[in-house]
Image (cartoon, rainbow, N blue to C red; front, side, top):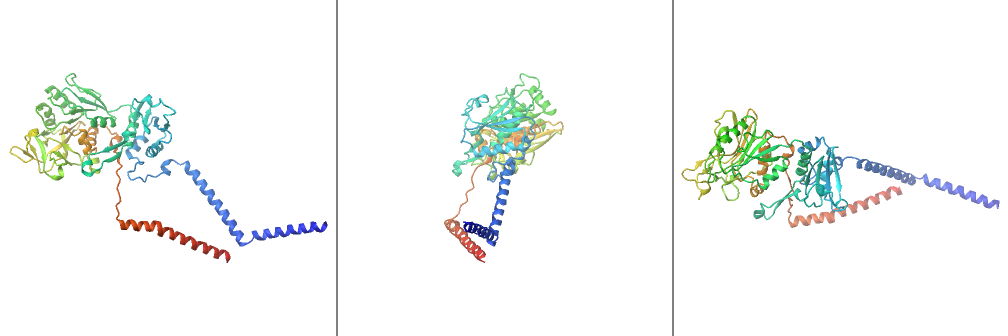
Length: 492
């Protein structure tokens, strides 16, 4: 019995020595070192991941989309970064129906200001929530921007625009994303206490506002009111600008005097008025003469192929002159289309005003005296040689301004679509000039058109061979060589 106990003890000692010997070998030391390093690296990776999850999305997500859909302009950052009221953007969306574009864009807005919060509302859980703010049918991924008792609804469909103007020439329509502009202007609207007041002159059979004009004014956060100088003796005191939209009948001399006095004292007037059609607007055009410009009779025809659109030399593509109104359009290489335009000439007859041309026809243009009754585009006796100004700006030392755009059709929906929105941008830049420094006005929609990469069949085959054959085979050979090399190291 005693001998048996001694054998067990001896076996235990031998086993312990064997284990100790095994752990002290070179192979065991290498394995232990590898395990320790793996644990340290794994711990570092876990710590980095935990740290990154607490960082703002602006440090963890990067916009690599071609249209920069998730990157905000400096104008948006300025508007949102300077808000001093609490703003909530309600994201109306059913679970599982979230738009990736909207989600990422809202994350960027959420990171810009502590005053702005994004809250997701599932209509299945809150079926009556959206009806508190809008009567419209609300679809998934629509937004409601709220601050205090002011709110603005942004439908998902309104954030995507389709321009079919080039369909008949290219066979395709272009798409753009207008989400940033709509969200930023909505934020600016709900936090602003005093919105610009634009008074629209009536009483002279003025043209109704097109949908393009209504949309542009709303997007610019400008409140509009109609007024008639036949019923009032002065321009309303809270008017930030007067808009005169294509009158058909003339104004009286008393109305002319009120408008001249208004602009002399620092007021802002924007006029859309071009070729007369069976009407006499003598007093009305006297307002243009007052600041130092005149309107020529007839329709401007420009035979320079670079200065008209489609096949009609009276659909003018004017040259944009550098100014605070046009510089943004020039930078973006946008084309303003001026359909059926009158020609303006700058006389500088009033030294109190500085008059500048915003849009010019070419030196090959002339004004067809026949006007709407023209029967040929050829120059005839009685026609006036160009070039002409097609839109002018005038300003005085008191800060008063007059913008005169010599086409009644600038903001027709069709022509605005042909210009890809450049016409409405030109109009809004003119209206906002000297009146407001609203940063949101300068935000344009982002094109979603794709740029396709076209390659021939030989190149495509070569790429397939490289991606499917060469690269995987290279990795396989590298792996075999690495395994063989490590086994040699262990044996040694």
